[in-house]
Length: 269
Image 1 (cartoon, helix red, strand yellow):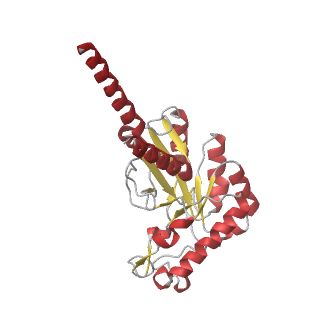
Image 2: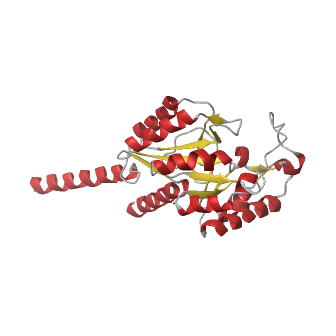
Image 3: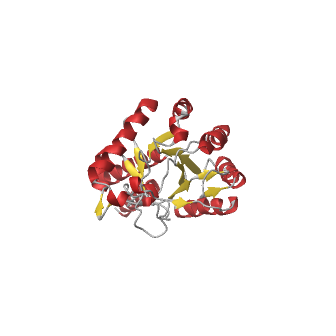
């Protein structure tokens, strides 16, 4: 009887161990890294895509559909999608709340504080249509311009929830698998960090078995928020060299993995 109990106890412990390991698993790796690039800049096509492709890494590009580097280079963006990078929604005109401090760059025409819910939703859906014309996909993720999630005093998150699998926010936090708000996923906004500083964030994600989302704008120029080509390259090479431990993936694939894991956890409860 004692032997049977001992075997049962060992089996139970093994199941609990496997469940705990699964809960912290990122596609059988220690952590997930998501590289996101905002605003449809020329440097994304000229600098970032070739760098990613040379190492067979994938990125997520949050595209502003009215931006000239998007509208004038549609065939190139179509090739980016064909090579399994993610084309994601960053609105039609990139509206931000101009009433907040430090928002002198916001023009009256695209001041989110004066938008209606219908206007922001319609512009976002127009962008989804433009992106679908390039990649043929229905499932999409979203990034809030400037991290602003309200029209005036009203949140527009629920108004667009049905249109997206998930959305990226701007709070600088590592993302756990179990209890993340998938419509406000945290990310680290990059501006001037060294390659070692970028790698340090990845190492923290590895230690905590979590996901780190990088938010890039300029890479080698073209934007006030910028990272050097050298720092960006050093990060990419670190990810490639440690690909047995790090899952570098798109934002869409990462959040779908989180959803599947959470569903499996609930089924096992």
